[in-house]
Image (cartoon, rainbow, N blue to C red; front, side, top):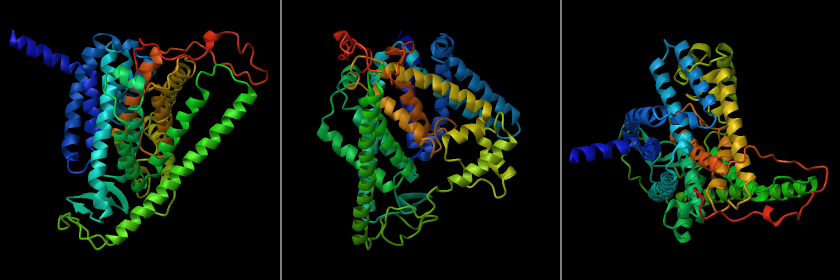
Length: 496
Protein backbone atom coordinates (compact mmCIF):
# COMPACT_ATOMS: atom_id res chain seq x y z
CA UNK A 1 0.00 0.00 0.00
CA UNK A 2 2.83 2.39 0.92
CA UNK A 3 4.53 1.57 -2.38
CA UNK A 4 1.33 2.35 -4.25
CA UNK A 5 1.02 5.79 -2.61
CA UNK A 6 4.68 6.58 -3.28
CA UNK A 7 4.28 5.55 -6.91
CA UNK A 8 1.13 7.67 -7.22
CA UNK A 9 2.86 10.73 -5.70
CA UNK A 10 5.82 10.37 -8.06
CA UNK A 11 3.48 10.00 -11.04
CA UNK A 12 1.53 13.13 -10.02
CA UNK A 13 4.77 15.07 -9.70
CA UNK A 14 6.05 13.89 -13.08
CA UNK A 15 2.74 14.92 -14.67
CA UNK A 16 2.80 18.36 -13.06
CA UNK A 17 3.50 20.87 -15.87
CA UNK A 18 3.81 23.77 -13.40
CA UNK A 19 6.59 22.01 -11.48
CA UNK A 20 8.38 21.28 -14.75
CA UNK A 21 8.05 24.84 -16.05
CA UNK A 22 9.49 26.39 -12.89
CA UNK A 23 12.31 23.83 -12.74
CA UNK A 24 13.15 24.25 -16.42
CA UNK A 25 13.15 28.04 -16.53
CA UNK A 26 15.24 28.47 -13.36
CA UNK A 27 17.66 25.82 -14.59
CA UNK A 28 18.11 27.89 -17.75
CA UNK A 29 18.49 30.98 -15.56
CA UNK A 30 21.37 29.37 -13.66
CA UNK A 31 22.96 28.49 -17.01
CA UNK A 32 23.83 32.21 -17.12
CA UNK A 33 25.34 32.30 -13.61
CA UNK A 34 29.09 31.77 -13.28
CA UNK A 35 30.54 28.59 -11.72
CA UNK A 36 27.14 26.80 -11.45
CA UNK A 37 26.69 27.10 -15.22
CA UNK A 38 28.20 23.69 -16.01
CA UNK A 39 25.85 21.87 -13.62
CA UNK A 40 22.78 23.73 -14.93
CA UNK A 41 23.70 23.02 -18.56
CA UNK A 42 23.95 19.31 -17.80
CA UNK A 43 20.69 19.28 -15.84
CA UNK A 44 18.69 21.02 -18.59
CA UNK A 45 19.24 18.02 -20.88
CA UNK A 46 18.03 15.69 -18.12
CA UNK A 47 14.88 17.81 -17.82
CA UNK A 48 14.10 17.24 -21.50
CA UNK A 49 13.30 13.61 -20.67
CA UNK A 50 10.77 14.87 -18.10
CA UNK A 51 9.33 17.16 -20.76
CA UNK A 52 8.89 14.19 -23.10
CA UNK A 53 7.01 12.30 -20.39
CA UNK A 54 4.65 15.24 -19.79
CA UNK A 55 4.12 15.82 -23.48
CA UNK A 56 3.15 12.21 -24.19
CA UNK A 57 0.97 11.43 -21.18
CA UNK A 58 -0.44 14.87 -20.39
CA UNK A 59 -0.89 16.48 -23.81
CA UNK A 60 -0.81 13.73 -26.43
CA UNK A 61 -2.46 10.73 -24.74
CA UNK A 62 -5.23 12.90 -23.23
CA UNK A 63 -5.65 14.71 -26.59
CA UNK A 64 -5.20 17.99 -24.73
CA UNK A 65 -2.96 19.13 -27.55
CA UNK A 66 -6.05 19.55 -29.75
CA UNK A 67 -7.35 22.24 -27.38
CA UNK A 68 -4.31 24.49 -27.79
CA UNK A 69 -5.32 27.68 -29.59
CA UNK A 70 -3.82 27.91 -33.09
CA UNK A 71 -2.18 24.52 -32.63
CA UNK A 72 -2.15 23.82 -36.37
CA UNK A 73 0.39 26.60 -36.94
CA UNK A 74 2.64 25.22 -34.21
CA UNK A 75 2.49 21.68 -35.63
CA UNK A 76 3.21 22.91 -39.16
CA UNK A 77 6.18 24.94 -37.89
CA UNK A 78 7.56 21.88 -36.07
CA UNK A 79 7.18 19.80 -39.23
CA UNK A 80 9.08 22.47 -41.15
CA UNK A 81 11.82 22.52 -38.50
CA UNK A 82 12.14 18.73 -38.60
CA UNK A 83 12.32 18.83 -42.40
CA UNK A 84 15.16 21.37 -42.14
CA UNK A 85 17.07 19.02 -39.83
CA UNK A 86 16.51 16.12 -42.26
CA UNK A 87 17.67 18.17 -45.26
CA UNK A 88 20.93 18.84 -43.41
CA UNK A 89 21.07 15.39 -41.80
CA UNK A 90 24.84 15.13 -42.32
CA UNK A 91 25.48 18.35 -40.40
CA UNK A 92 24.73 18.44 -36.64
CA UNK A 93 21.51 16.43 -36.95
CA UNK A 94 21.50 15.48 -33.25
CA UNK A 95 21.96 19.12 -32.18
CA UNK A 96 19.14 20.25 -34.45
CA UNK A 97 16.93 17.48 -33.08
CA UNK A 98 17.54 18.71 -29.51
CA UNK A 99 16.56 22.21 -30.65
CA UNK A 100 13.42 20.73 -32.24
CA UNK A 101 12.48 19.19 -28.85
CA UNK A 102 13.17 22.49 -27.07
CA UNK A 103 10.84 24.32 -29.48
CA UNK A 104 8.15 21.71 -28.82
CA UNK A 105 8.54 22.35 -25.08
CA UNK A 106 8.04 26.09 -25.62
CA UNK A 107 5.01 25.54 -27.84
CA UNK A 108 3.05 22.92 -25.94
CA UNK A 109 4.14 22.90 -22.28
CA UNK A 110 4.65 26.66 -21.91
CA UNK A 111 2.28 28.34 -24.37
CA UNK A 112 -0.20 25.47 -24.12
CA UNK A 113 -0.77 25.95 -20.38
CA UNK A 114 -4.20 27.49 -21.11
CA UNK A 115 -5.48 23.96 -21.78
CA UNK A 116 -4.81 22.88 -18.19
CA UNK A 117 -7.89 22.47 -16.01
CA UNK A 118 -6.15 23.31 -12.74
CA UNK A 119 -6.04 27.11 -13.07
CA UNK A 120 -5.33 27.49 -9.37
CA UNK A 121 -2.03 25.70 -9.90
CA UNK A 122 -1.18 28.03 -12.79
CA UNK A 123 -1.92 31.09 -10.64
CA UNK A 124 0.38 29.83 -7.90
CA UNK A 125 3.04 29.12 -10.49
CA UNK A 126 2.87 32.72 -11.72
CA UNK A 127 3.20 33.98 -8.16
CA UNK A 128 6.17 31.77 -7.29
CA UNK A 129 7.98 32.57 -10.53
CA UNK A 130 7.74 36.30 -9.79
CA UNK A 131 8.72 35.88 -6.15
CA UNK A 132 11.70 33.59 -6.80
CA UNK A 133 12.88 35.76 -9.70
CA UNK A 134 12.92 38.87 -7.50
CA UNK A 135 14.67 37.09 -4.62
CA UNK A 136 17.39 35.46 -6.74
CA UNK A 137 18.25 38.48 -8.90
CA UNK A 138 18.24 40.82 -5.90
CA UNK A 139 20.57 38.47 -3.99
CA UNK A 140 22.96 38.28 -6.96
CA UNK A 141 22.90 42.08 -7.31
CA UNK A 142 23.49 42.58 -3.58
CA UNK A 143 26.56 40.33 -3.75
CA UNK A 144 28.03 41.79 -6.93
CA UNK A 145 27.50 45.54 -6.52
CA UNK A 146 29.79 46.05 -3.45
CA UNK A 147 32.63 44.28 -5.26
CA UNK A 148 32.39 46.43 -8.38
CA UNK A 149 32.13 49.67 -6.39
CA UNK A 150 35.24 48.67 -4.46
CA UNK A 151 36.93 47.92 -7.79
CA UNK A 152 37.35 44.25 -6.91
CA UNK A 153 37.08 42.06 -9.98
CA UNK A 154 39.01 39.52 -12.00
CA UNK A 155 38.92 36.18 -13.79
CA UNK A 156 38.16 32.86 -12.14
CA UNK A 157 38.72 29.71 -14.22
CA UNK A 158 37.53 31.34 -17.42
CA UNK A 159 34.70 33.36 -15.85
CA UNK A 160 34.89 37.16 -15.94
CA UNK A 161 33.54 37.88 -12.48
CA UNK A 162 32.07 41.26 -11.52
CA UNK A 163 33.37 43.16 -14.59
CA UNK A 164 33.65 42.22 -18.26
CA UNK A 165 34.78 44.68 -20.94
CA UNK A 166 34.30 47.63 -18.60
CA UNK A 167 30.69 46.65 -17.83
CA UNK A 168 29.15 45.30 -14.65
CA UNK A 169 28.69 41.54 -14.99
CA UNK A 170 28.33 40.54 -11.35
CA UNK A 171 28.07 36.77 -10.96
CA UNK A 172 26.54 36.31 -14.42
CA UNK A 173 28.41 35.02 -17.45
CA UNK A 174 27.57 38.07 -19.57
CA UNK A 175 26.47 41.67 -18.83
CA UNK A 176 23.60 41.41 -21.34
CA UNK A 177 22.20 38.43 -19.43
CA UNK A 178 22.45 40.43 -16.21
CA UNK A 179 20.65 43.36 -17.84
CA UNK A 180 17.79 41.22 -19.14
CA UNK A 181 17.37 39.32 -15.87
CA UNK A 182 17.29 42.58 -13.93
CA UNK A 183 14.63 44.00 -16.26
CA UNK A 184 12.48 40.85 -15.82
CA UNK A 185 12.88 41.11 -12.04
CA UNK A 186 11.68 44.73 -12.09
CA UNK A 187 8.59 43.68 -14.05
CA UNK A 188 8.00 40.85 -11.55
CA UNK A 189 8.14 43.44 -8.75
CA UNK A 190 5.42 45.35 -10.58
CA UNK A 191 3.32 42.20 -10.91
CA UNK A 192 3.63 41.49 -7.17
CA UNK A 193 1.89 44.81 -6.47
CA UNK A 194 -1.32 43.74 -8.30
CA UNK A 195 -3.98 43.05 -5.64
CA UNK A 196 -6.24 40.86 -7.79
CA UNK A 197 -3.27 38.79 -8.92
CA UNK A 198 -2.14 38.15 -5.34
CA UNK A 199 -5.68 37.44 -4.16
CA UNK A 200 -6.40 34.81 -6.81
CA UNK A 201 -2.88 33.31 -6.55
CA UNK A 202 -3.30 32.85 -2.83
CA UNK A 203 0.01 34.60 -2.23
CA UNK A 204 0.88 36.87 0.64
CA UNK A 205 0.91 40.56 -0.08
CA UNK A 206 4.50 41.77 -0.35
CA UNK A 207 5.03 45.06 1.39
CA UNK A 208 6.01 47.97 -0.83
CA UNK A 209 8.99 48.85 1.37
CA UNK A 210 10.44 45.43 0.50
CA UNK A 211 9.68 45.53 -3.22
CA UNK A 212 11.07 49.02 -3.84
CA UNK A 213 14.66 48.22 -2.69
CA UNK A 214 14.58 45.03 -4.77
CA UNK A 215 13.47 46.95 -7.85
CA UNK A 216 16.05 49.68 -7.15
CA UNK A 217 18.94 47.19 -6.83
CA UNK A 218 17.96 45.50 -10.09
CA UNK A 219 17.59 48.87 -11.82
CA UNK A 220 21.10 49.89 -10.72
CA UNK A 221 22.43 46.54 -11.96
CA UNK A 222 20.69 47.11 -15.30
CA UNK A 223 22.20 50.60 -15.61
CA UNK A 224 25.74 49.46 -14.73
CA UNK A 225 25.57 46.50 -17.12
CA UNK A 226 25.29 49.11 -19.90
CA UNK A 227 22.97 46.78 -21.83
CA UNK A 228 21.27 49.02 -24.37
CA UNK A 229 18.87 46.30 -25.53
CA UNK A 230 17.70 45.58 -21.97
CA UNK A 231 17.14 49.28 -21.34
CA UNK A 232 15.09 49.47 -24.56
CA UNK A 233 13.11 46.47 -23.31
CA UNK A 234 12.30 48.22 -20.04
CA UNK A 235 11.43 51.51 -21.77
CA UNK A 236 9.02 49.81 -24.16
CA UNK A 237 7.51 47.86 -21.28
CA UNK A 238 6.56 51.21 -19.74
CA UNK A 239 5.30 52.44 -23.13
CA UNK A 240 3.01 49.46 -23.77
CA UNK A 241 1.72 49.42 -20.22
CA UNK A 242 0.73 53.06 -20.66
CA UNK A 243 -0.91 52.14 -23.98
CA UNK A 244 -3.23 49.84 -22.08
CA UNK A 245 -3.95 52.46 -19.43
CA UNK A 246 -4.87 55.01 -22.10
CA UNK A 247 -6.85 52.84 -24.53
CA UNK A 248 -8.40 50.17 -22.30
CA UNK A 249 -12.04 49.34 -22.96
CA UNK A 250 -12.07 51.39 -26.15
CA UNK A 251 -14.37 49.65 -28.64
CA UNK A 252 -14.87 52.76 -30.77
CA UNK A 253 -13.00 56.04 -30.84
CA UNK A 254 -13.30 59.35 -32.70
CA UNK A 255 -10.49 61.09 -34.54
CA UNK A 256 -10.34 63.91 -31.97
CA UNK A 257 -10.18 61.49 -29.05
CA UNK A 258 -7.51 59.42 -30.75
CA UNK A 259 -5.36 62.50 -31.48
CA UNK A 260 -5.59 63.71 -27.89
CA UNK A 261 -4.76 60.34 -26.41
CA UNK A 262 -1.83 59.74 -28.76
CA UNK A 263 -0.42 63.19 -28.01
CA UNK A 264 -0.62 62.63 -24.25
CA UNK A 265 0.77 59.13 -24.57
CA UNK A 266 3.69 60.29 -26.71
CA UNK A 267 4.57 63.06 -24.25
CA UNK A 268 4.48 60.77 -21.22
CA UNK A 269 6.45 58.02 -22.97
CA UNK A 270 9.06 60.50 -24.16
CA UNK A 271 9.51 61.83 -20.62
CA UNK A 272 9.77 58.28 -19.25
CA UNK A 273 12.34 57.23 -21.86
CA UNK A 274 14.50 60.34 -21.41
CA UNK A 275 14.29 59.97 -17.63
CA UNK A 276 15.52 56.37 -17.75
CA UNK A 277 18.39 57.21 -20.11
CA UNK A 278 19.38 60.21 -17.97
CA UNK A 279 19.15 58.09 -14.81
CA UNK A 280 21.48 55.52 -16.36
CA UNK A 281 24.05 58.16 -17.27
CA UNK A 282 23.87 59.61 -13.77
CA UNK A 283 24.15 56.17 -12.18
CA UNK A 284 27.17 55.25 -14.30
CA UNK A 285 28.90 58.57 -13.54
CA UNK A 286 28.29 58.15 -9.81
CA UNK A 287 29.48 54.54 -9.77
CA UNK A 288 32.49 55.50 -11.92
CA UNK A 289 33.40 58.19 -9.40
CA UNK A 290 33.24 55.68 -6.55
CA UNK A 291 35.46 53.17 -8.41
CA UNK A 292 37.99 55.95 -9.08
CA UNK A 293 38.28 56.54 -5.34
CA UNK A 294 38.62 52.82 -4.60
CA UNK A 295 40.87 51.98 -7.57
CA UNK A 296 43.87 51.32 -5.32
CA UNK A 297 42.06 48.45 -3.62
CA UNK A 298 43.48 45.03 -4.49
CA UNK A 299 41.02 42.57 -6.02
CA UNK A 300 40.11 39.65 -3.77
CA UNK A 301 39.56 37.29 -6.70
CA UNK A 302 42.47 34.95 -7.44
CA UNK A 303 44.17 36.38 -10.51
CA UNK A 304 46.61 33.49 -10.76
CA UNK A 305 43.97 31.26 -12.28
CA UNK A 306 44.27 30.50 -16.01
CA UNK A 307 43.64 33.60 -18.06
CA UNK A 308 43.49 35.85 -15.02
CA UNK A 309 44.23 39.53 -15.62
CA UNK A 310 45.02 42.29 -13.24
CA UNK A 311 42.59 45.21 -13.34
CA UNK A 312 44.12 48.13 -15.21
CA UNK A 313 42.07 50.93 -13.69
CA UNK A 314 38.70 52.05 -12.41
CA UNK A 315 35.56 50.79 -14.15
CA UNK A 316 33.66 53.46 -16.10
CA UNK A 317 30.65 51.23 -17.02
CA UNK A 318 30.63 52.23 -20.70
CA UNK A 319 31.02 50.10 -23.81
CA UNK A 320 34.65 49.74 -24.93
CA UNK A 321 33.29 49.25 -28.45
CA UNK A 322 32.45 52.63 -29.99
CA UNK A 323 30.50 50.97 -32.83
CA UNK A 324 26.89 51.85 -31.99
CA UNK A 325 25.41 48.84 -33.86
CA UNK A 326 27.86 46.39 -32.15
CA UNK A 327 28.39 44.55 -35.44
CA UNK A 328 24.68 43.96 -36.12
CA UNK A 329 24.73 45.59 -39.57
CA UNK A 330 27.57 43.29 -40.56
CA UNK A 331 25.60 40.31 -39.24
CA UNK A 332 22.64 41.42 -41.35
CA UNK A 333 24.79 41.32 -44.50
CA UNK A 334 26.21 37.93 -43.55
CA UNK A 335 22.69 36.61 -42.90
CA UNK A 336 21.70 37.60 -46.43
CA UNK A 337 24.42 35.29 -47.76
CA UNK A 338 23.13 32.35 -45.70
CA UNK A 339 19.52 33.03 -46.73
CA UNK A 340 20.58 33.21 -50.37
CA UNK A 341 22.12 29.74 -50.19
CA UNK A 342 19.23 28.09 -48.29
CA UNK A 343 16.16 30.33 -48.69
CA UNK A 344 13.16 28.01 -48.23
CA UNK A 345 13.85 25.83 -45.17
CA UNK A 346 16.97 27.45 -43.75
CA UNK A 347 20.06 25.80 -42.33
CA UNK A 348 19.09 24.73 -38.78
CA UNK A 349 20.28 26.51 -35.64
CA UNK A 350 23.23 24.21 -34.92
CA UNK A 351 24.66 24.80 -38.40
CA UNK A 352 24.89 28.57 -37.99
CA UNK A 353 28.64 28.73 -37.29
CA UNK A 354 29.47 25.80 -39.59
CA UNK A 355 27.65 27.24 -42.59
CA UNK A 356 29.01 30.69 -41.78
CA UNK A 357 32.51 29.30 -42.24
CA UNK A 358 31.39 27.48 -45.40
CA UNK A 359 29.78 30.42 -47.22
CA UNK A 360 31.34 33.54 -45.66
CA UNK A 361 35.00 34.43 -45.83
CA UNK A 362 36.26 34.52 -42.26
CA UNK A 363 32.99 33.09 -40.92
CA UNK A 364 30.25 34.85 -38.97
CA UNK A 365 31.20 37.96 -37.03
CA UNK A 366 29.60 36.39 -33.90
CA UNK A 367 28.37 32.90 -33.06
CA UNK A 368 24.77 34.16 -33.23
CA UNK A 369 22.85 36.80 -35.18
CA UNK A 370 21.75 39.07 -32.28
CA UNK A 371 18.26 39.26 -33.78
CA UNK A 372 15.44 36.86 -32.98
CA UNK A 373 13.54 37.45 -36.24
CA UNK A 374 16.66 37.14 -38.39
CA UNK A 375 17.57 33.91 -36.60
CA UNK A 376 14.18 32.38 -37.49
CA UNK A 377 14.58 33.33 -41.17
CA UNK A 378 18.12 31.97 -41.40
CA UNK A 379 17.57 28.82 -39.34
CA UNK A 380 13.98 28.01 -40.31
CA UNK A 381 13.92 29.54 -43.77
CA UNK A 382 11.29 31.74 -45.35
CA UNK A 383 8.73 28.95 -44.98
CA UNK A 384 9.33 28.67 -41.23
CA UNK A 385 9.29 32.43 -40.78
CA UNK A 386 5.95 32.84 -42.60
CA UNK A 387 4.39 30.08 -40.48
CA UNK A 388 5.71 31.63 -37.26
CA UNK A 389 4.45 35.10 -38.21
CA UNK A 390 1.01 33.65 -39.03
CA UNK A 391 0.84 32.09 -35.56
CA UNK A 392 2.09 35.30 -33.91
CA UNK A 393 -0.50 37.47 -35.68
CA UNK A 394 -3.36 35.18 -34.65
CA UNK A 395 -2.27 35.18 -31.01
CA UNK A 396 -1.60 38.94 -30.99
CA UNK A 397 -5.06 39.68 -32.39
CA UNK A 398 -6.69 37.41 -29.82
CA UNK A 399 -4.76 38.86 -26.84
CA UNK A 400 -5.33 42.48 -27.86
CA UNK A 401 -9.08 41.95 -28.30
CA UNK A 402 -9.39 40.03 -25.05
CA UNK A 403 -7.59 42.77 -23.13
CA UNK A 404 -8.88 45.98 -24.70
CA UNK A 405 -12.50 44.95 -25.26
CA UNK A 406 -13.04 43.60 -21.74
CA UNK A 407 -15.34 45.91 -19.77
CA UNK A 408 -14.13 44.71 -16.41
CA UNK A 409 -11.30 46.71 -14.91
CA UNK A 410 -8.24 44.50 -15.40
CA UNK A 411 -5.69 47.05 -14.19
CA UNK A 412 -5.31 45.24 -10.85
CA UNK A 413 -4.69 41.90 -12.55
CA UNK A 414 -1.53 40.59 -14.22
CA UNK A 415 -2.97 40.68 -17.75
CA UNK A 416 -1.89 44.26 -18.70
CA UNK A 417 1.60 43.55 -17.33
CA UNK A 418 1.87 40.37 -19.40
CA UNK A 419 0.67 42.26 -22.47
CA UNK A 420 3.29 44.98 -21.95
CA UNK A 421 6.02 42.38 -21.36
CA UNK A 422 5.21 40.48 -24.57
CA UNK A 423 5.03 43.62 -26.72
CA UNK A 424 8.27 45.03 -25.26
CA UNK A 425 9.96 41.67 -25.79
CA UNK A 426 8.99 41.74 -29.49
CA UNK A 427 10.91 45.02 -29.76
CA UNK A 428 13.79 43.60 -27.71
CA UNK A 429 14.00 40.63 -30.10
CA UNK A 430 15.28 42.98 -32.83
CA UNK A 431 18.52 43.42 -30.85
CA UNK A 432 19.14 40.06 -29.14
CA UNK A 433 19.14 36.28 -29.75
CA UNK A 434 15.61 35.69 -28.59
CA UNK A 435 12.16 34.32 -29.50
CA UNK A 436 12.83 30.69 -30.40
CA UNK A 437 16.08 29.11 -31.62
CA UNK A 438 17.98 29.40 -28.33
CA UNK A 439 17.74 27.13 -25.28
CA UNK A 440 18.15 30.01 -22.84
CA UNK A 441 16.34 31.88 -20.09
CA UNK A 442 15.89 34.82 -22.49
CA UNK A 443 13.79 32.69 -24.85
CA UNK A 444 11.80 30.59 -22.37
CA UNK A 445 10.82 33.62 -20.26
CA UNK A 446 8.94 34.92 -23.31
CA UNK A 447 7.04 31.66 -23.78
CA UNK A 448 6.28 31.49 -20.07
CA UNK A 449 4.74 34.98 -20.11
CA UNK A 450 2.92 34.20 -23.36
CA UNK A 451 1.50 31.07 -21.73
CA UNK A 452 0.24 33.07 -18.75
CA UNK A 453 -1.25 35.66 -21.12
CA UNK A 454 -2.97 32.90 -23.11
CA UNK A 455 -4.86 31.87 -19.95
CA UNK A 456 -6.29 35.39 -19.71
CA UNK A 457 -6.85 35.40 -23.48
CA UNK A 458 -9.09 32.35 -23.17
CA UNK A 459 -10.76 33.58 -19.95
CA UNK A 460 -11.73 36.99 -21.40
CA UNK A 461 -12.45 35.84 -24.94
CA UNK A 462 -13.48 38.69 -27.25
CA UNK A 463 -12.15 37.23 -30.49
CA UNK A 464 -15.50 37.57 -32.26
CA UNK A 465 -16.10 41.14 -31.08
CA UNK A 466 -15.24 44.01 -33.38
CA UNK A 467 -13.18 47.14 -32.78
CA UNK A 468 -14.89 50.03 -34.56
CA UNK A 469 -12.71 52.95 -35.60
CA UNK A 470 -15.25 55.77 -35.66
CA UNK A 471 -12.79 58.37 -36.97
CA UNK A 472 -15.00 60.51 -39.20
CA UNK A 473 -18.04 61.07 -37.04
CA UNK A 474 -18.92 61.71 -33.43
CA UNK A 475 -19.62 58.89 -31.03
CA UNK A 476 -23.28 57.86 -31.06
CA UNK A 477 -25.22 57.08 -27.93
CA UNK A 478 -22.47 57.97 -25.49
CA UNK A 479 -24.86 57.83 -22.55
CA UNK A 480 -27.13 55.11 -23.92
CA UNK A 481 -26.59 52.64 -21.14
CA UNK A 482 -24.95 52.64 -17.75
CA UNK A 483 -24.24 48.94 -18.20
CA UNK A 484 -21.62 49.72 -20.86
CA UNK A 485 -19.25 51.34 -18.37
CA UNK A 486 -16.18 49.46 -17.13
CA UNK A 487 -16.70 47.47 -13.94
CA UNK A 488 -14.46 45.88 -11.35
CA UNK A 489 -13.47 42.22 -11.63
CA UNK A 490 -15.94 39.53 -10.71
CA UNK A 491 -14.98 37.95 -7.39
CA UNK A 492 -15.24 34.59 -9.14
CA UNK A 493 -12.69 35.40 -11.85
CA UNK A 494 -10.45 32.42 -12.45
CA UNK A 495 -7.25 34.38 -12.90
CA UNK A 496 -5.63 37.31 -11.13
